[in-house]
Length: 417
Ligand code: EPZ
Image 1 (cartoon, protein in one colour):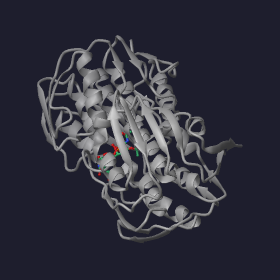
Image 2 (cartoon, protein in one colour):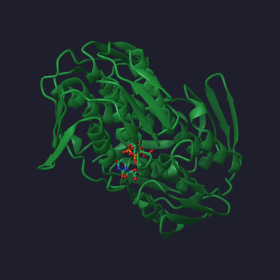
Image 3 (cartoon, protein in one colour):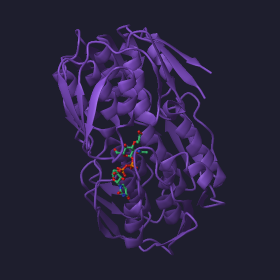
Image 4 (cartoon, helix red, strand yellow):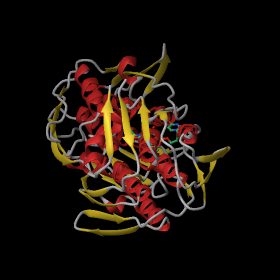
């Protein structure tokens, strides 16, 4: 079980290159199932989840090797086994994104129910409801969804709540359905728009991606394409929060500032100076950050995937911050670990009241989910003494070469067995 050992107290200084977005790369990899021609991708991050998705696709008969220098070619010439088994699905919930494409391409799919995870129950009822509206029959048997459809047909689907992968699954399924599909109350996340750009390059007819109403006109078939995956806005936000927390000065290259307005606004409110230009973001944090309150919401609101990182920032800020989580029902586990480092946090329902302290003390803490781990690393970067973050396989799922990138910014951080 890998751990990270961090000796805090060093302001981060220097330049870091942002990798491709995990939450864009994963649905885009599934889009390869929609065509018998090769899909050529660039700027794909080398992450555990990307390796897992490639393995899942190979099990279906897709040619899919992990990325090399960010480049990856996926070729679903024939799909020999339209199945996503529990052994892989239980390690990566995004596996559910094969459901829509398999139904659209093969007319059948057997996909394990993902089950819950640390941050919440994570149901997929909206994915199922939408596919049924498009003519699929989906039976739940022995922990699997058995789905079938002669040919999907267009439908008007109003999502009960904003769901990112729900929107992505249905948008992919609709590209090959007969007729027009309208997705209302659709997710507006930039990763949805990046997926739509890739699908359009493959020949799909999509309007409104990035807004809450997406219109897809089905076509008979899709072709291959080339696509450059968008930068990872959550990785970007994580390094920005780390720079603000450590009082450093960092230049992020290859980032996409337009996908981060809510985070940038909150960092400015915390006292950081942020300059944009030339595809880079520069942050200069002067001294101790001011406490800023955040309330997570679907895009363009403040991202739930940035909540743990901002709780770490608030732990050492001047003043008291209210952090409210409205998307997931159990996404405060990092608060209990931050308290071990000396943070003053009290949880009241879905709000954490964080009273900033002058100093945190290093300790051994345990990562519980991907973004919680990032929050604990940020806290370790500012704590006095040594912090050991355990179970960092969570981090490896979503951050490419984290300790290498932080080390290059001056952090005293190393991976220990
Ligand atoms: C995506 O998860 C991201 N994952 C998550 O990032 C992110 O936290 C989340 O969107 C919210 O932005 C990927 O894109 C691979 P949702 P997703 O469906 O799609 C409820 C990370 O750290 N819901 O938007 O699974 C659900 O329980 C990960 O990279 C239903 O009730 O999230 C939640 O409360 C963590 N029924 C809310 O909606 C459904 O059918 C939003 O979930 C679907 C969702």
